[in-house]
Length: 210
Picture 1 (cartoon, rainbow, N blue to C red):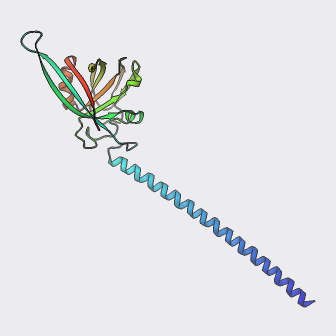
Picture 2 (spheres, rainbow, N blue to C red):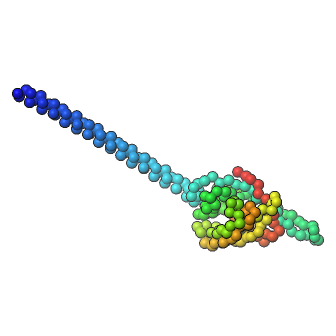
Picture 3 (cartoon, helix red, strand yellow):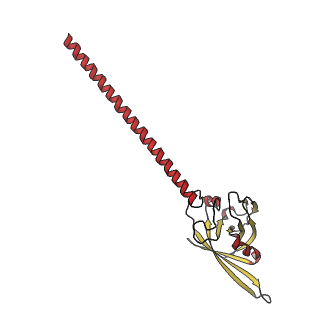
C-alpha cells in the first residue's frame, strides 16, 4: 500500500512539475512578446523623432519632400523714342515649384531663406491651375519672409501679370484667381519690387527644370 502511495505521489508531483514548466514557458513567451512590442514602439518613436529633427533642419518642411525647380523668364517691354519701337529687357529666375496640395500648403512656412535648399532659387511658383476662377486666401501665417506676389494668367504661349502685391508676415490676401491656367509667383522682394514696377508691361514664360 505504501509503495502504491509513493508511486501515485511521484506521478502527481510529475504532473504538477510539467504544469509548472508549461506555465513558465508560456510566461516567458509572453514576456518575450511584450519586450519585442516595446522594442518596436521605441524604434518607431526614434524614427519619427529623427524625421522630425531632419525636417526642422531642412527649413521646417512638414514632409521633407523633394522640391523641383523651374526657370521663369520675364520680358519687360519699355517704349523708346517713338511708338511702336520698344526695348525688351529680360530676366531669368530659378524658382521652386509647388505642384501638390502638400507643397502648396507648405510654401514658405517656417522657412528662413528664399533659397531654403541652396539651389540658387529666388522664389517659388505655385501651380494653382486646378483652382482657376475660385476665390482663395494667400496667407502669411507662419511665414517669416516678406514676399512679392504675382498672379499670372495664360494668354497663348505666355503669361501676363494680372494682379500683384507685396505681403509681409501675418498678412492675408483674399483674391479671385483668373480663369485661364492661373499661376502664382512668390519672389524675394529684392527681386520682385523691380518686376512689380513694370508689371503691366511684363510677359512671363515658364521652362520646366529639375
